[in-house]
Amino acid sequence: MLETAASKFMWNTAAEIAHAVASGRAKAVSVVEATLARIREHDPLLNSFTDVVEQRALARARALDKARAAGEPLGPLAGVPFAVKNLFDIAGLRTLAGSKINRDRPPAKRDARVIERLEDAGAILMGALNMGEYAYDFTGENIHYGASHNPHDLERMTGGSSGGSGAAVAGDLVPLALGSDTNGSIRVPCSLCGLFGLKPTYGRLSRARTYPFVASLDHVGPLARSARDLALAYDAMQGHDDDDPVCAERAAEPVMPVLELGAAGLRVAVAGGYFKCKSAETVAAMDRVAAALGANSDIELPHPDRARSAAFVITASEGSALHLDRLRTRPNDYDPAVRDRLIAGAMTPASLVVKAQKFRRWYREQVLKLFGDVDAILAPATPCTAPLIGQQMFTLDGVEMPVRANLGVYTQPISFIGLPVVAVPVPLDPLPIGIQIIAAPWREDVVLRLAHALEKKCVVGVTRPAL
Amino acid sequence: MKRKTARKAKAVKAKRGGKIKAARAKKPAKGQRPVAAKAADAIDSLVTASAQALGLDIEPAWYGGVKFNLQLILRIGALVDEFPLPDDAEPAPVFHA
Image 1 (cartoon, each protein chain N blue to C red):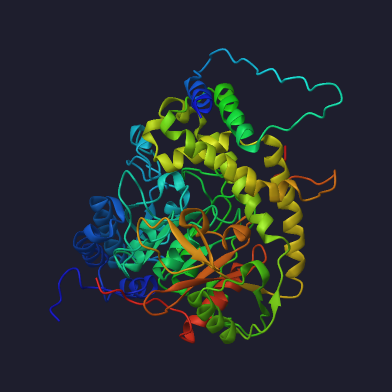
Image 2: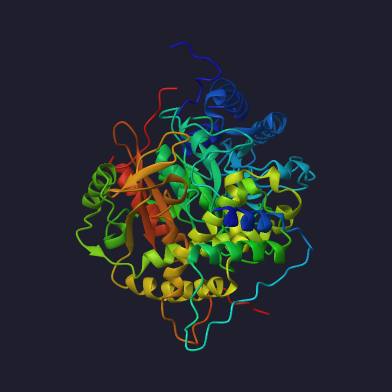
């Protein structure tokens, strides 16, 4: 095959690129030029980028190459191109958060903290990615900027709200992207696009200078094509940050040194009851992952249906409080589907919201007890593979229900109490689907070790779409 | 049918800062138990009153969407509401001064 700029470094992981740049086998500038060429060639199909910071990326790459030539040490992500959901501040750009309204905001003065930390590790920011409006979305559709398209089937959803992040990584425009996850917005697109995604423990990674949605439930995290890349990015982003009041005062606990420890000694169970999805693809994926990890028993989470309900209530109420003034002054500038939910959220009785927050603490205490008996719990990430773009309804366990509200039916009860989760992709034919690996708070090491072990056994992994 | 449409239109026309007239409940006859308002009517009342109180103008085209979503929140939220918790249950976020 004739090598073009766009075909260089194709399908390389972040770890492979960093190794090539650090060893001098590749120039960071060549990596960035190849990335830019692929974005130009494929993004018109995927609609994943809303801004490309070409000059910034090239300048950064030239500086990295110069540093290497001078014998300076390079970081663990040297020369790795990445992009971020457009709710992360990028200095000089307007932080859109998927909206039309935010186009009127002044450009951000400084990058989000996690962008700074990835760049400190040598990564190179390529731009901002499409997303569902104000992150109130599971589909990856957007009325203002168009839907992101699933690289495995362009007529299908990416899932959301980090839809552009899913499309850009699965479509090989970048090997690494950042997303946010309030109720499933990293794990849902990872499931539908066939990617690895990490939603860390609530409070683990700084959300400073990201556009919020639901302060009680917002997380940020990476999407990648391998568990190792998740660990590399996660380690680079860890650490307390005074600029995010929720960010825990914990020292960084790097996962890379323990990644190869594998699944040995870890007790894994399958979430039962509420999480027993009957769809053929979910059953097939779960059987495969559970068998590989020796997860022979079920474990019951207490009242996950109520946990999902409480997350739903808190999301509606806090999300609407954030937007109330704009709902008064610019209601017609919202996506109608988002606006109607936000207005309804503003009308939610306060007593219900308080009860939901009290239930959250009760539920957390009950779930944490389960981790005395197991180290990790498996649950489906989505009830189905990627629906068609625009599809309104789908059938779950024989019941027809709305797509938009129910793609996150299995992710919401987990993020509700901030547990760390890796979504791993099971490469089914014709479309992939994700399984959640869930651990106790602050045990990202457990979920990443298990994801990496499954990948090495070829039980999970990304498949390359034919773009 | 006409009455219903008129009531809805009145609700929708309620402007920010406008006068809010509380509907006076009809007194039940002696010996008669008060009858709870029909669920759909109660949601209409809640949407109308909340929109007025919050200063939100709801256009007729959105009314159905807002009402549907509020019904959904309350229906889903009932699962939380009905769950018994002790009086000393603390909410999840705890503020540290």
